Image (spheres, one colour):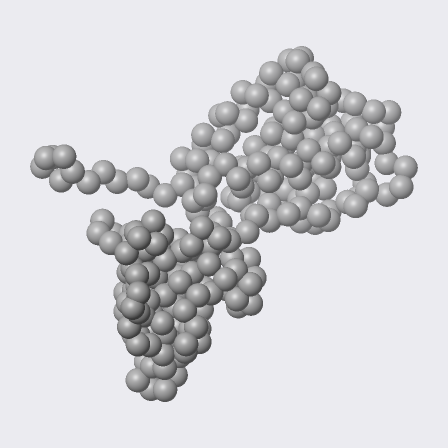
Length: 249
C-alpha cells in the first residue's frame, strides 16, 4: 500500500530530475516552500494519474457502494443536491440486473421488518417519450424510476406515505465520486497491488510534460498498458452473454 507522498517520492526516484537525491523529494504534501520543481511536478503527475485511473471506467468495483434515499411524500424528482444530502459521494445510480429488467429496491421505512421490493428502472429516453405523459396518477407507492441526464432521479407514481405512515426508502448501489489525493497520507482506494500503475502513469505524464522520449518513458508506456489490463481483469464486473439472443440455444 502506498500513500500520496510515497508515490510522489517513487516517481522522483525514477525520473532522476532536479538537484536533490532521487527519491528524497517531496518531503511532505502540500510541499514546503522551496521544494524543487521536479518534486512539485511529481506531486502533480501522481494526482493526475490517479484521476486518470478512476476515469478509465465507469464500473470499477472499488468505486461501487451502497446507500439509501428516503422518499418525501409528494416529491417526485430528487436532484444531486438532495441525494448528496444523505450520500455525499454519490455520482450516479447503478441498477441491479439479473438478465431481465434493471431494478433497485424499495421498502417501507416504518415497518418493523424490512422487506425489499423491486422497483423497475426505465431508461430515460423511454421515460421521456412514454412514462412521463400526462395525466399522471395520484400519489402512490412508486413502481418505476429513471435517472435523468443531469443524474437526478425521478419516480412514478409520485411517492406517498407507506401503509405504516412512514416513508418509502429507495435502496440502491451507486458509483462514488472520484477520490482526490491532497495530503501526504492520502492512500488511493484501488487494490494496493495496483498502486504501481499510478506511479508509472505519473512517470508517463511527466515524460509528456517534458517532451521526453527516452527509455524510461517508453518503459512507462509499457508498464501502464500491462498494469491497467491486470487491474481491469480484476476490478471490472464479469460480463455474461445471453445465449437466447439472435436464435442461440
